[in-house]
Length: 454
Image (cartoon, rainbow, N blue to C red; front, side, top):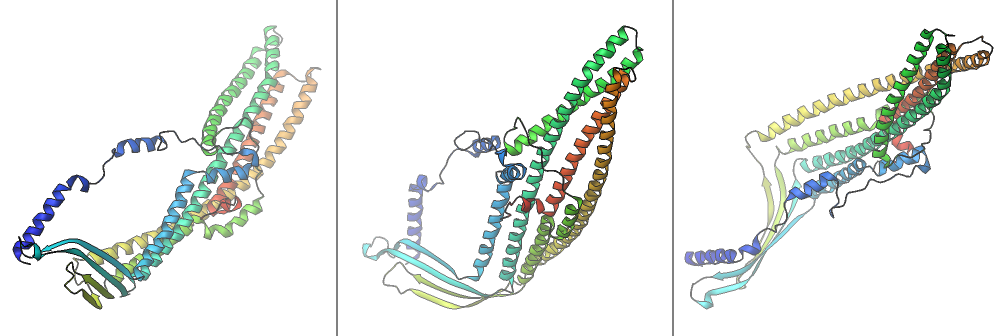
């Protein structure tokens, strides 16, 4: 076909495209602004707000924590990222398989304008097949990097599961503590109230010095302030509890008691397999494989390529090509070498981060264990103190009628007994929280709750 025929075909194609301009445009729709705003507000595509899932607490502490983690959006997101990483293995491995592509052309060839017999219409087909034979190990390294990233993503799921379980458990423990302490202070103020009123009457009658009443009133005001502080702590715990469990119950069961120190000490064996360390190690292996792939790109590639081209004109013979190709980049301005140096530095930084995380995890474990031992000793001392104050309290109440004890002494003992009891409640809650934190850091919490990492 002559040059004039080519120009005519090109012009005809342009006119055709111009005539179909409206149909060839990309589909249009509403802008992303409304969708972004709806997603930020937590609304479903239909416009309805997404209601939080309410966890059934009847199964107890462990079952409720397991349900709270499973309905957590962040845990679900971690699972989706793990699935994405697993699919990346197949994507990386596809380079080892044959690559097949095809294309077609439907049109006409005009060899002589104005001559109908010189116009040939039809369809042409292009088919190509290629198979990589050698690439210096780039594909194998890419598959290894994808596998390491998949393992790391599973570890990230475990990290997320343990973190969400720890948060939910801490909210439960803090709410139980605040409510229990609130009940204790309310009961103690109810006990002290009549005593203060009686002391006030005796002071008004001139039977007792007013200084004693002022000291008692200061103690009562201190208890009232503590009650307000506990109420604020309770509201904070309720907000966190609602976030994880969907609703705050009227009555909340006591969390399981703190485990024995020996059980926590055995967690030391799991420190080396902690999810955070596994994720860090997987990231290092992935970087090492990426570095191998970058180094392999300095080598030539060898492959087998074959293709078939069928022309539009039926009178022309199809073209078939086959052969081995060699491809090598001799110069790229230093891009590949810069990539190698970047990955080397990144891998060295990741190794340093992993060592720091290992040392930090061990130090945190030892500190938590030491704190747990101190809390056990404090609980024993508090138990003895509560026992002695309780006995003194009973004795003073019995001696009050005979005049052997006075109201100021009794109220002082009541306040001290209350403080010892509430401190014991706080210590117990801290022990349970410390045990949960140790389990979460070693990854044992999610395993105990039977929450799958995949």
